[in-house]
Image (cartoon, rainbow, N blue to C red; front, side):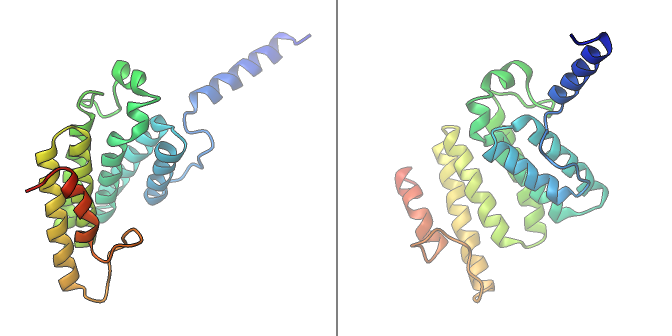
Length: 200
């Protein structure tokens, strides 16, 4: 039979483990690694709670180091986070009842928050002429608007993504954007999305 000290020790260990939402993720002060871990957590492991914490920690570090491109990537990750399927699926009840670490974010306005952070990311990439990154941001803003049931706004971002990709191609003729197999240009890749929404 366990004595009282053993029972208390086991209880404390259980409490500590249950409180560690990021169990299995190595502790690090590297903001790049925090972002990589966050993607793994919310996208692959269906664990959005520790993922949001890591994204916010990375944002704080990038700001402190004045690393603007790192900050843009962290904002981009937050945009993906708010749009992620796990929030609307397995964790929808949690977020409806408790909200997010981001104080003014709610389950209802999560797509708005996704757009907000994509816009923050886009602004930095524009300032740094990172047109390849900007192409991706506008594309994903379009996806978010489409998920939110706003096809006109989705069309606008899809078309803006094409325009930026063409500018990137002119300025960097020897560099190609990474596209799914079977597509030579970003415009070709975007055509089914534009056709589906009957974008004009």
